[in-house]
Image (cartoon, rainbow, N blue to C red):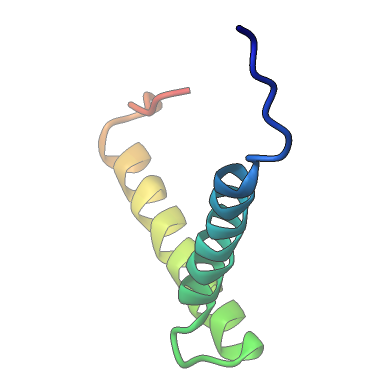
Length: 70
């Protein structure tokens, strides 16, 4: 005998809802560092300047060769 079930997608809907909830929670957690947009931009710019300075120092110390993955 063949039985046909209608519906039964409640589990799939719950999984999709939970996945969306987890993604939005992760995005909020990334942004919630207690900084305003301007403070975050300043922090990121400072980090990039420091990173660039280290890279330039390494390039000067090692000659013209740089050892970075591309």
